[in-house]
Image (tube, rainbow, N blue to C red):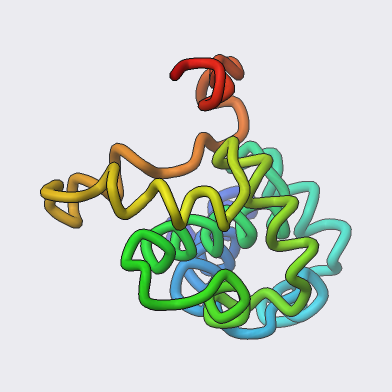
Length: 151
């Protein structure tokens, strides 16, 4: 009997999807590449290389993007502080969270919190999530402009 499980490449893709699905589901939990790799019986280095080849970014970068996407939603609500949002999405360092947020979104979490509620007012949540999501690696060339200079 020959099937998808007989092909080593397809078996590996199934494992990589399992890791990506776990990150999507458990982004707020303490996750690291070593634990993710152990869960699919791969070394951390092998998982990182194969994940990047399959999805265009490292498992850590993918995890942080998921966390930032969720943080954007929480910040737009406006009922949590930046620190509360940082910990709610699974980050343990406010500095790392703020740096990564600024890299992906183009402004600091506190500035986004102030602007986000106004920009998203009246937009249904499902649409706001799509329109206001961070730009991920290799999606588009960096073309964001400074918000202060566009006023």
